[in-house]
Image (cartoon, rainbow, N blue to C red; front, side):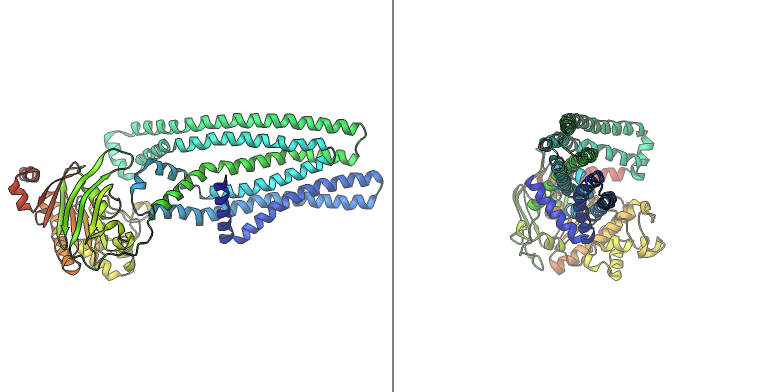
Length: 596
């Protein structure tokens, strides 16, 4: 509970900073609810007592006060809901929601995006910004409701002290509701993975990219069946939790109702014996009419505040994870140019949550100014090695040294500012062509000349010529823009990777997988020349990952990976002379191309 209170205090400060007027108004409305409940009951008693005494003036004034108090009570109740809903929505959307996305996007590595425990919590939290803030307001509502409950009981206690026993009885529904909500919270988290699965299957069935294959293969009915099964799996457990929660709620309210009825019987009997006034009877009826609503409000507010735990717990977990895995800014930055290169010393890596070692004891030096090709069959560890060079993953064992400096000690942002890459699973950014290319170097996002140069570098001039608004053309059909072919998207990614002109590390991970043979040859010739120019200027290392062996024959160093092990290294000629795995795979591809 201490962690919840600390978070609610933080969210309140956030609300006060973002929407001070709404926050102050909501607090005033909550306080007004406490005052108007007491004022309504007391003025009604005063009206009846004054009338029974024949005090006309006092009765009229009390009646006016009762009318005003009752009207204010209704207005304040409506106003409270409106103010809190608006404040929660604004703070959730403008503060909490951006925080979640910022934490997802700015963690240094990628491991968290491949961990099911992380993704389970992201599934719960990503759309819960307003609910988190709403939980804070529910906590304040519960305080207001409990104060109203205390005031109500004090009013009843003025009739008979025995009615004060209803206060502990009012805690019974709260305790029972919390037990039920605990079951719901556990079910939400436990079913996050099947819920993600059904959402993924739904997206598969409704997106154009996968829609073609689904229709050709006739797999639509099977995907629908699997999506329904995943949905049923998630919802069945959540429904069971809701039934358990309903049972707890029924038990709590049954016990409280029994206690409340007993209290009313006691007061009616006392009044019938002549131990009270007519005004006391009116007060009793008035309070009795609102008491159940007051208790219900207190229980609902407390339950909602406690129920926010289904979002608070994942949110706090994510925040603690982010705090533990966010590397602080290191004073060490990469040198202006490489002189020795990058050395891998017994580097190993195992993916989280598995026992599969993606890389095992890799030791090799990538000389400064060299073109290094990494080849091997699928699953051999090529892309994993590239991701480690980009600091997306950290080694489980061994070290990566940059000119003798441990890469772990070099500031991540500074290292990436001196790196550039075109990945196999490249991004398709649905924005203007200028932005989708300019994102490769944010400092020059508005530099049209550099963007045009990058497009020429990637042999993407024809894309620019074909688009109706040139660089200002919106890309992506989903947002009403112009769609590109797969090859054009890949060339836009290559252009993005060409925006930085002084990298120390230049990575091309299967950069031409979506291109035809002539385009591939032309682009590789361009980028080989670019690699030599970068080597002269900054000593940059160009790393090429490719499954087409013919494109890497000109590399200075070829690394052959097999099941996470470095099996061979050398130039094309050296590896062909060895007659090992590289020569075998090269021969197979050469024969296949000749046969075709």
